[in-house]
Image 1 (tube, rainbow, N blue to C red):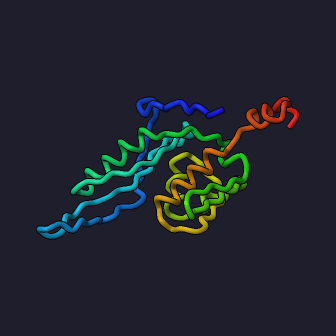
Image 2 (cartoon, one colour; image 1 turned 180 degrees about the horizontal axis):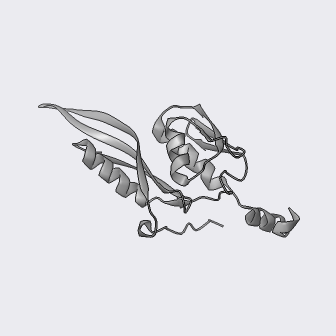
Image 3 (cartoon, helix red, strand yellow; image 1 turned 90 degrees about the vertical axis):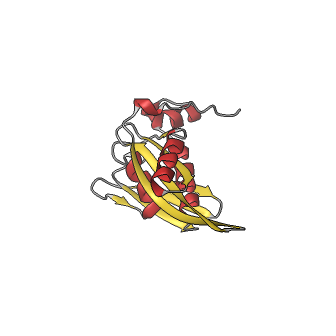
Length: 169
């Protein structure tokens, strides 16, 4: 049975955007080279545990970032979190990119690099240990991080899968 993902409305959240990567790309044509920019952007509301990512391309950087933000607002995901960390260890995969997310005790902070750090701070996680394995391509790393975040389950969901009450776990 396929899971139906409800679309989240970006207008309901106080979204903050963060640019992860800007890439200058050229297309060789008969008259020379056409220059444009590609931007990878993460938006999120830390108070609501909502995050999304998007990519935009344009002739100038600000337009590419704006397009990336609009794209990210269309791909928002609600994430199951505990108070300041994630509920359990999880491994996300996309292509050759693997991202390991591990819960951490209070006061640890966000131990993550580049693309994973942008996603973790945007979603509102304050204490987490992460390891990015395989590719360093920010697009694939972010997609692997989102795969990991989508796998997170809260206590009630795990209890329902096991046929028990949440208090019994």
